[in-house]
Length: 65
Image (cartoon, rainbow, N blue to C red; front, side, top):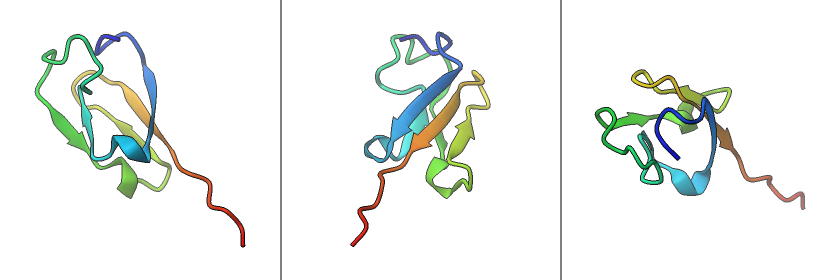
């Protein structure tokens, strides 16, 4: 995937700390690396200020006891 190919990217807790561009992006040098504190966001979303990709954090479901 390229840095501008997708507008919304779903990430998991395994992807933290999150930065854009991600290592999976073929144009990883399309802009400076910026860390996005998505885990601190109330809605679990973070927007890259350079390329505009919206990252959505898919949280693990906790098991009920």
